[in-house]
Image (cartoon, rainbow, N blue to C red; front, side, top):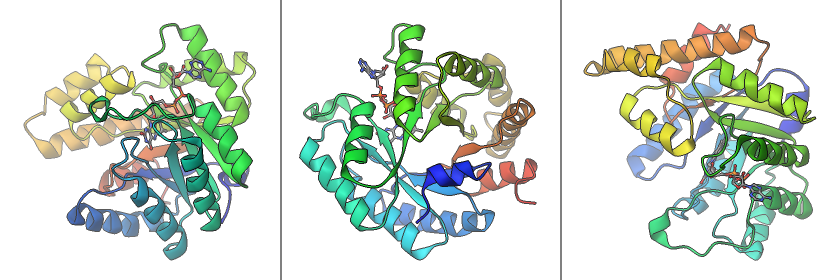
Length: 285
Ligand SMILES: Cc1cc2nc3c(=O)[nH]c(=O)nc-3n(C[C@H](O)[C@H](O)[C@H](O)COP(=O)(O)OP(=O)(O)OC[C@H]3O[C@@H](n4cnc5c(N)ncnc54)[C@H](O)[C@@H]3O)c2cc1C
């Protein structure tokens, strides 16, 4: 199974993110989505991990099945929050035994109402070290171009992200809606001496209310102009979807004009929006 560090060294990367389905219907939906997106030949795909514990086994099952049964390279997300060191070592060892070579090492945010214990590792960097000590993996981390929501000052936040990237093979970003956010972030990382590849995460807004809520939670600024464009067609699902796809295409085009050649698409387990953006950008040619 290829390592993502080698895939990225070979050139531009277009990757897709999925989450473990919670119902049999959602499971079939994901299978269909995977079938429909496989012909786009993404450089890799990734599967999220429920920090609250609900989908922990499913991430392992889906990642190993994708790697075994499709032509795709799948990366497993793993969060350290609420896990003991022994549990994490066991999970990572199982991935190694299953031939998985790529892990996105995260802290995670377990839902507060579950009252889970804090876990042995405090930060994602500790998990990067644990994964590297446990097996032969390419290890990625999450980056936050607009700062992590819990950070109080930008300079410390940037420095911590730089330190994390120095230990990782690559970074994948939280979604954002304006190209200037990305270029400012890249400039700051460069000043801090970061040479690790970072890939922008792209979230097409197909439903203004749910994405606004996600943006609030992740600390991403939801630009007023984009919100107004979407609110103008709020009662027409197809029109709102079209605006969301147009806006994501515009963002990617602006990023490409500034030299970005790699993207990570948040698919929300659906194929059509990603396929349309892909086609608008000429990636399927
Ligand atoms: C691409 C991507 C994929 C994601 N996938 C998942 C997923 O699958 N499952 C899931 O539950 N969540 C996922 N998340 C969400 C992520 O878990 C949250 O954003 C979480 O709040 C932070 O995770 P992190 O790995 O960036 O944490 P960290 O890098 O540990 O940072 C968390 C906070 O700790 C601070 N910090 C870091 N190091 C130190 C230090 N040494 N001392 C003091 N403070 C420090 C940081 O500044 C930050 O405020 C994903 C996010 C992204 C961008």
